[in-house]
Length: 291
Image (cartoon, rainbow, N blue to C red):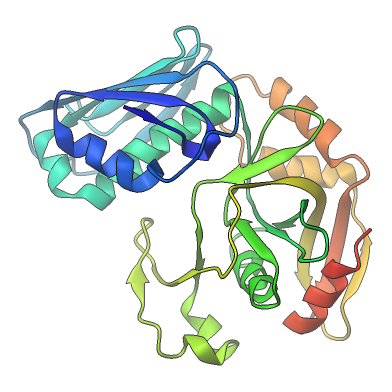
């Protein structure tokens, strides 16, 4: 079956129906965005128990591997443009674990190896500039998702909580999730969330999961904004390009990192900012004034 995670063609084969059903849930609604040779993935299921640990990632010159145990493991080859995922039958009894730890991990990491550059950033688009994507950047807990939700409430379009940069001068950014996941303290910031139940995210942490009012599969990224909570009015100032590249490269998984670094240097040039803010509405207003 052909799917389009991140808008990229991926052909998945399996003699067992369940992996294809899970892939359909993840990517069945995604439309093609890129004209590129498809990545091929074969999934093989054998009798066996659920692995005790999470997959271990190892990069190599020709791709990477992810291993849980001798039975449940995966490999991706850059040269062959193909991957193989071996799983125990018990893994399919835990579909969300299989989806997050194996299927999506393998496919999205492979796509970031051959085509995209992964960006640890949320992406939103202002209502008055329909294709000017704004990346919200910062370490875990810096408020990326919270500010993205505040933007969505103000009429902005939400693209992704975790973004991927495609090749090309248009700087197209896409993502894999049409929902925003917020930590429980967000209830104190947004009254409408107080009745929302907590759910368990794929990483095992409790969160509030929200569908954004307006969602897009992709946007042309125009700004990279690094977030800093600071008392007083929201202030936007230039942020060093080199610091932006260093930040993004901390999350890069490629064996040969030079290509990703070169792409990032080109991408961030003249488009990086620091946003210091205390109140979310001030921050949204300041972001809306970016050129």
